[in-house]
Amino acid sequence: MATSPSTPHTPAFLRLTPALRQRIYSYLLPPHPDEETTTIVYDLKFPYLQHPSSTTFTPHQLDICTCPLQPLHQQDAENPSPPGCNDHIYSRYICCGPEVIVRPGTHTAWVLQQAGPAFNVLRPATDEELQRRPHAGIVLVNKAIYSETLPVLYRNRNFLLLTGICSRGRYQAYATQTWLSGLSPLARSNVTSLTLLCHSNEEDCRDEDAQLSYTDFARFCLDEVTSLQRLRLKVWPDENGISLRPFSILLGRPDFAIHMVEHLDVDDVFVFRDAATFLHYCNQKEQG
Image (cartoon, rainbow, N blue to C red; front, top):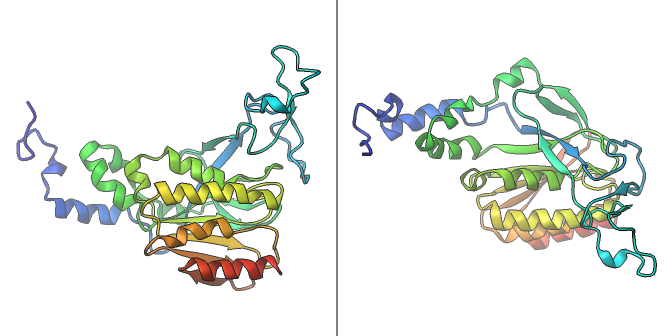
């Protein structure tokens, strides 16, 4: 028989009033006042590639892939591949995407020191930065506490996913979408702020191909990240080959804004709340 909340068998913490429990959560879980961004470090694993760890920068993603998704119509009908042979040149958006492996909290925590077109400079978090991390162990105590704490842990926290060097692009929007997909519906529904680094190599090895991933990411956020209020896009002022237009579909949502951060000696921030103004900015940026 289920016990009522007031019985002695109920954990002592749950016998506190909901208001008092929420007050305790407000000390343990929200972002620290000095924490602008919560960094999540991920690695990419390419299980079907011949040279998955290659760090040679090229304008193409040249490698042999054995994934099962390469369309059959691309094979030569007169000279079909031998049975069991599926070797082909890797093609993003056609072949299987990489596995996104989020490093657990027990690993060294890394933060972004400097973003760059070729690679990001990461550094270990300082002791002070580690102290700002939330004390989230309480979330896993039981289902009741889980449902109470998740909104406090995720809301008003700006998430940024980071990785190091990858010759095929760092797949950041793809990795962010994969991470969001892996959250519980309750956690995902309380994500309110995300950051993407829209630089060369950050999403794809060819700037013009990043638009496909940005389109998928924006549509996913529109459908699945229902409380998203802010998307921070960090860009270089002199990079014109990356189209940011796909993000405009998010600007039809009430209380949503895109924050464009242009890297200069002092970062310039432009806030957009409607699609027309944002697309005008994109036109000017693409025209140089």
